[in-house]
Length: 106
Image 1 (cartoon, rainbow, N blue to C red):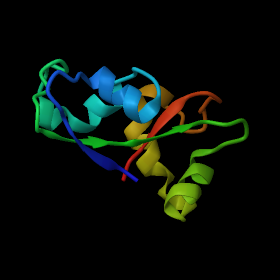
Image 2: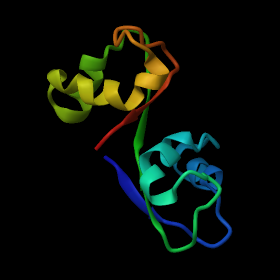
Image 3: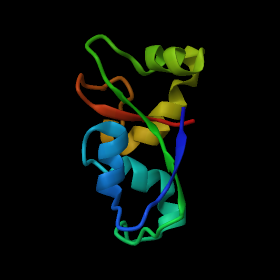
Image 4: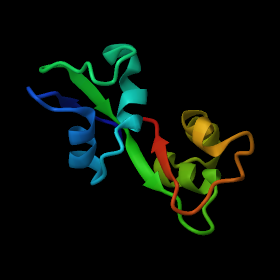
C-alpha cells in the first residue's frame, strides 16, 4: 500500500505528489512525513526517504467500511481510514463525499 520514495535534488513535495498522484496536492505526503520533514513542508532534503501513502477517490455509494474491506480485507478496519482523514471528513464518518481524496494508511 504505502510506498517509499527517495527525494532527489531540487524536488518539491508538489513534484513528488504529481509523480505519484497526477496532482500537485502535496499535503497527504507532508502529513505522512511531518515527523521526518519538520514544520516546514518546503524543507525536504535530497536522499531523504519519504512515505507515499495511497490515495482513494470516494465513489458514489462508498462507505468507509466498504473501502476498508477493499484495502484491508476487513470492513471493521474503517476507523484506520477515518483517523487518517478526520480533518477532511469531519466529525461524522458517514459523511464522505464522492470525489474526496482519502489517504489509505498502510
